[in-house]
Length: 589
Image (cartoon, rainbow, N blue to C red; front, top):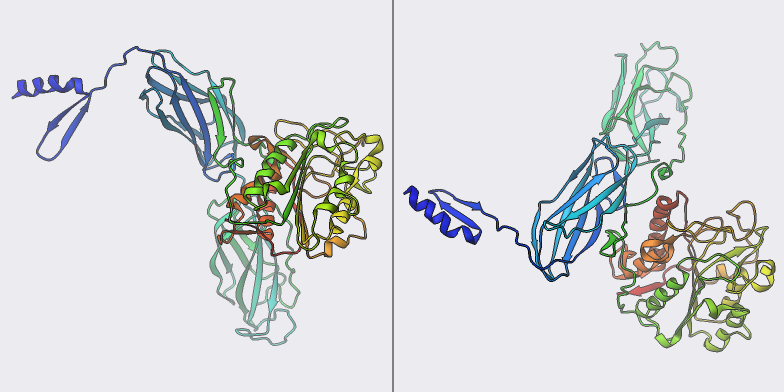
C-alpha cells in the first residue's frame, strides 16, 4: 500500500499537486513548478492608496491599503515577484503586512496585490517615507519608488461643563417661590450644558450626577449622550430636590461626571456651581473648530523616477471623463476664459487646463450647443479683451444675447488682482501691466454690472480666482505676491451699490472669499475649486439623490470639500462664496 501511494505521488507531481483521500477529507499537497528562465518580462505598476476615511492621512486606529496593479508588457513571464514596503521611521504602532509572492504574471496579464498598513492607537505624528521594492526572481526588478504617508497621533476629546439653568416652574417642579433660584424644600429641574472643546469626537458619552448628601434627592441623573462632536454642546436635564435638612453653605455636594469611550476626554466629579438661593452660572459656549493645522499637511503621495510607475489616490476622481447629462440648453451661451501665462505677472497654474475641462462640462453636463461655447486662453485675452467682450452697449455679448431668451454662463480662471488699497479688484488681461492696473484691468464690479445689463434670461458666473493679492499655489507650486505690498491677504472692500445681488436672474459662484487664496490641485492639474465643481457635476453634489443638482446642493458640496482639502493642503481656509436666487437646476443626469 505504501509503494502504491509513493508511485501515485511521483506520477502526478509534474501536474503541480498531489491528493491523498481519506474517509472525511481531501488533503492537497502543493508542489510548485520551478522557475524557468525565458524571455524577459517588462513590468509596469499602477499604485493606489486607500485609507479608511479617505483623507489621505493615516490616523490612530486607522487602516490603509497600498494597491498595486502589476502589468507585464514583456515577451516572457514575470516569475517570483516579491513586494516590499519599509518606512524610514520606526514606530512600533505602525504595522505593514506584505502580500504573498506572485509566482507568475504572463505577458499582457495584470495581477493586483495589496499591502495593508495599519496605525495603532499610540501612533506618533510623523511623515513616513516608505520605500516600495518590487523584485523578480531573475532580476527583472523595478526601480524603487517611495510612498509618502503622514501618520497622525490620536488627539483626545475634552468634555467640559459649560453652565446650567434652573427651572422651578412647569411639569415635575414644585417651588416655594418662582424666582429661578433653588430653595430647600423645592423640587426643580436643572439643565446642565456640556461641550466638547477637544480635537476629536467624544464617542458613546455617558453622564452621571451624584450627591454625597442623603438629604438631596436626584432623578434622571444617569444616561447617555451618544457621540459629542468637536465644538458640539449637549444638554442634560436632571431633577434636584434638597429637603429642609440641607444646611450646606456654598455649593451643594452635587457632582457631574462624563465618560467617553476613549476615556481621555472624561470629566470626573465636577462639583456643580449650585447653591441655595443663588443664581447659577449661565451656559457659556466656546467656538471650537477642528485644528487641522497641527498635522502634517501633505496627503499621501508617491515619489518615483521610473515611467513604469503611476499613482492615483483612491479619492481622486477623473474629472476629464465628463458624463453626458439629460439637460439641454439650446438657448444658452457659454464664455470660458482661462489665463495661465501672463506677460507681466507670475503664472496662474492650471488655468488653461481649467478652461479646456470646463468647455467639456458646459457642453456635456450643462447641455449647451458646442457652437455656442466660446473659449479664450492666454494670447486671446490681450488688450481690451474684457471691454470688447462684456461691454453692455458695444461688446461681443451685446450682439449675441437675445434679451429674455439667452441663458448666459461665464467661467473665469486666472488672476484676480486687487489694487494696493483693496478698494477694487480686477480681472486682468494677459499682457496687462501692474503699473496700469486700473486702466488695463476690468473691475469686478464693472464686470458684474455689465453682465446684469445685457438682458439675458439668467446669468451664472463661475470664478476660480482669488483677489487676495497672491497668485494661485498648490502643493508643488509656491504663491507669489502680485501687488507688491508687504503683506498678502488684502481684504477687499465692498462697494455700497451692488444691484445685481438682488437680481433673481443673477448668480455668482466664486472659489474663495476676498482675503483667501484659491489653490491649484496637482492630481487633477486644475484649480481645487474647479476640481470639486466638476466632481460635483458628475453626481457627487447630488445630496438628495434625485439625479438633479441644484445650485444649493452644489454650493453645499463645494463649501464642505474645498475648505476641508484646502486646510489639509495649506493649513488655511478656502471658503467658496455663492449669492443669487436659489432653485436653479444646474444639471440632470
